[in-house]
Image (cartoon, rainbow, N blue to C red; front, side, top):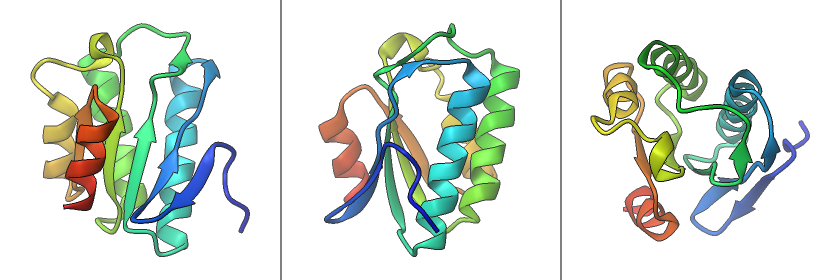
Length: 122
């Protein structure tokens, strides 16, 4: 199995750092692929850095629900995911984190990569 583009394995966790202009659906598909790859290779921690992805507005709650559920299914509870995004893309109530938790996935979202890594490796 070949690693997805933008995917790298690092000490302590894997890192997925996509970049470019794309539709929300493409970004979701890419993150799903990174989670599936991490799980397939036995990586239990994944840092997803989305700060260089543009091309869509902040997702509505229904979209957040759908894609976080998709990511939770992909993780099967085996991959802990920390997402780093621009502040305007993060729901103030952290709805996606609640959806992930309810679906059995350890996930959190941050604006700061250092904080995300600290949460991920604890």
